[in-house]
Every structure is written in structure tokens, then in C-alpha cells.
Image 1 (cartoon, rainbow, N blue to C red):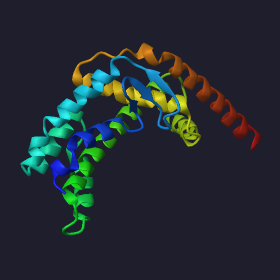
Image 2: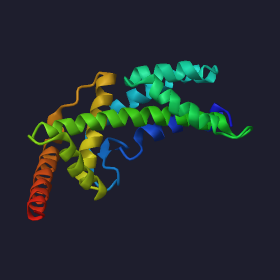
Image 3: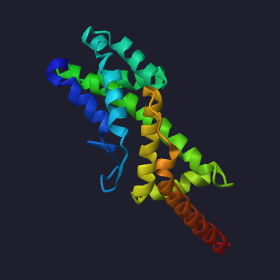
Length: 204
């Protein structure tokens, strides 16, 4: 399967939007059960699409390495980390398999995954600043919320992904948009921390 047959437009849009954005302008949580209207989100996603699509000619010219270098540069992520995973996955493809489309998907999905991971870490740091306990404790508490598919946490994480995209394309996205959701998370973390403290006290 060639890259043209793969329909790169659909691949880029799918990987940019999955578990994150719903047209025309809704930020969603990862279960798609909760959504928030952000008017500028559609423009942000469109401009990110344009940036990525503009470098696909490198891939079409068989310059896969240059494509990944350009992509990771746009996203501000580590090239070596993405490329090492990409190599492992692409080399595992069987000879003669419809691999060009899959290799393109590997390169783009791993890049977006790393970008989102960094954005979520930054989102968690914003939460940590509201507390005076250790980062490891916060990670435990947020981990519990994630295990329970907490929609507010997921929506906040996705907001930060959108925020980082907005910085790349030069569209300002104010933190105040998500302030109500942020405050809900703070209350949930406080409640979970109190439960954890009570449990630890009673175990002695």
C-alpha cells in the first residue's frame, strides 16, 4: 500500500484528534463522554494538520529520516527517542507487507504519543503546585483517578495537549477556560489524599 493509497490526510487527522477532539470545536475526554466547547480548537487542529501535512513530501520522496527529524522538530520532542521506537516497529514488518502506510503511522503516532506525554506531565506539574506533598504521592493519586477513568482529569490533560499545540501554531489559549475543571481536580486530589492519610494512620 503506497502513501497515496493510505490517504495521509485521514491518517493525520485521525491521529491528531483521537480521544481528544471532536469536530467542529469540542475538546473531549478520552471516553468521549464529556466535552467542552473551545471555539479556537478547530483552528488549532487545522493549523497543526497543515504543519504536519506540509512535510509529508519528505516521506513521499523516501526521506523517512528527514521526515521524522522535521516532525520531532515541529513538536519539540526528542528525535532519538521517537526514531529508536520507529525503527524497532518498522523492522518487525514482514517482507512484502503493506508497510509504507504502517511505517508512516508508526512515525506519526509515536511522535504524537511522546508530545502528549510531555504535555500531560506539564499539566500534572500545574496540579502539583497547589500542594506541598511529594510528586510521587501526586502521581499515585492521579493514577487512581486515571484508573477510574476520571473525566475531569482526562479533559484537563487534553486541554494541556491543545494548549501545547496552540503554542506551536501561535494561537493564544487562556488557562482560565479550564479553571472550573482544574478546581474540581484539586478537590478530588485533596479528598483522595485525606483518605490515603487516614488509611496510613490507621495501619499503625
